[in-house]
Length: 175
Image (cartoon, rainbow, N blue to C red; front, side):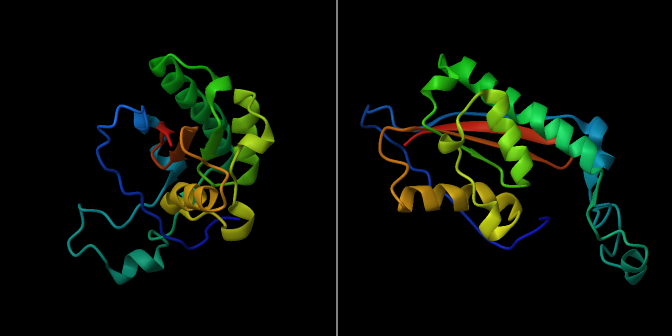
């Protein structure tokens, strides 16, 4: 599954209650050496006008991906970013109630969970229903898990994603 269609958003607000709930940490990483492994050449701010018919004819408006390199790096970097966040928070993998990985590919989600030694029942996945909804995948999965009652107040939820460039990261929410 390459792309699905969806939108998602999360509204954050200050929590002064002292109950420890909220966004606990967020860690982002990048490595530009891999820019041509997952990218779109156009549109580009270097071009004026940005959209030209010849760019379409040359195939420059289409995503390009070296699947093997993306898979290998996603399976390494996503768990690393989760472990980095846990270390920052003074927590362990056992403290995670649910992991919500970016829903790019079910095999990547499985490998990330395996790499962290998180049991499948603690991994929220929905790619089989929607495909890769790119930036919307985590908010959609989070919304579904809250709505169906899996995620409850006080639970620790780990989010992790990987994307073009390469970029990757993690965030931790005490729901």
